[in-house]
Length: 175
Image (tube, rainbow, N blue to C red):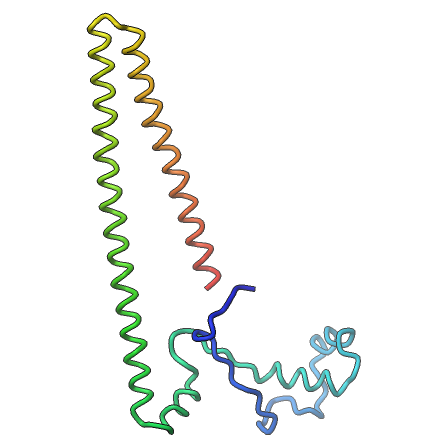
């Protein structure tokens, strides 16, 4: 079970006087009755639990349940509109932050590519210079080191990106 923020999930209290498809005197649905039989031995208590289950409501998202919104409107007619404006402003703010985060991630990626290119080219150039100067072993070592370093950073970066994508997809499924 995932953690839920109180502001995102509102539950309407149980009102026993409401009419429901199953009154307390009606027989319980068989599948649920069998499940509850071992857990709750008393027949009246099981019927009360079923009544509570039948009337549970959860409101997801930035807005309260419509009945709660109506209750705010009965206090002050401007409250529902103010709540809607507040939710719209919050959504716009969140989208703005996400837009800047994506832009910064793209910029960081290009800057990283640029500096990686400079480092690899400098190391390769130094290796070629060493080979041409007669230091074949050192030059070849420098070139091999540059190529292995660039390849390993590329592979590690790709694995990290895949893990980040999988984590993001799992977080979205939980919502």
